[in-house]
Image (cartoon, rainbow, N blue to C red; front, side):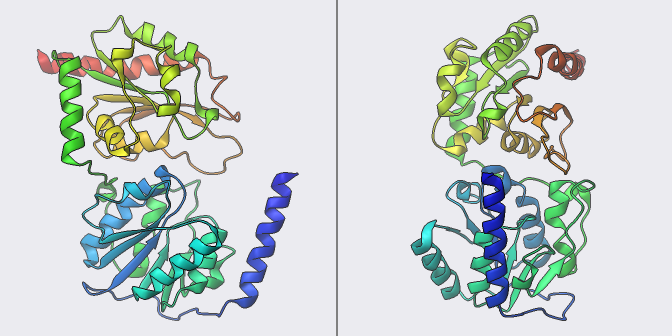
Length: 361
């Protein structure tokens, strides 16, 4: 019932916006930009939503050398803070006061181009774009297309990876790219990297194969359960490897029930700390896509647990890393059995352990 009410209100707001919006469609098929062009890219929502935009941001900068600014959310703005391709990050503040403050800030910067990087309809972003004083407003073809001056066909989410869908905007700017160019960009600060290296060296001076087990995700539906993680840790004790348990602050007490405390990366509020740890693993096991994408940025092999409940698109899997997973069609991963996961994970892990042993020989 609540979903139906939410859908009705959303439809009503979009209808209102359509009625008051000026029709700004342009006949130009390709946009010409140069080093003086100021582009604002919009991506709100969560950490993973921000990370998947970074391959396109990197391409846009390298191919056109324009000035790139980001409008982000309080939940994800830090993903962009240390990105060399980005001039500045504007953080959207929720509420009516925050909305008008954001509009004022954006319009004062006199952007040449605004790109909506959401491949679904966002009411908030639709109203923001409608209020901007910008000649070129770009987005994917969907029910709010009337707020854009230029649109591209929305790539089929059942055929195209999320990185490819984000990079489909390239056709408006006249540049091509190869799949090998699609890389997540996240550069932890040197301080965070040094801290993680010091922690790992102190815990594991022998420098064996380091497997990271991330137990946290964006929702409780993707927590696999204490008993399942304990079984996994116990199975892994028979292998000549090092283990590092990684978790969010909210899951720290649960983590201590899974493994001895010294083998847990003590969580910090700083996302940089988490990212640096992920990027220094030899393999990652995780139910969280943002962690998987961070591993993908360094081509680290990953094993994922996925919920694909009423989801009519490809899972958000790594694009470059070797990858294996278990997917459930149920609303949560709680009922994925340990046996099902282990039967897939064991050969995936042993394949890399075999390669490591061969390299040592």
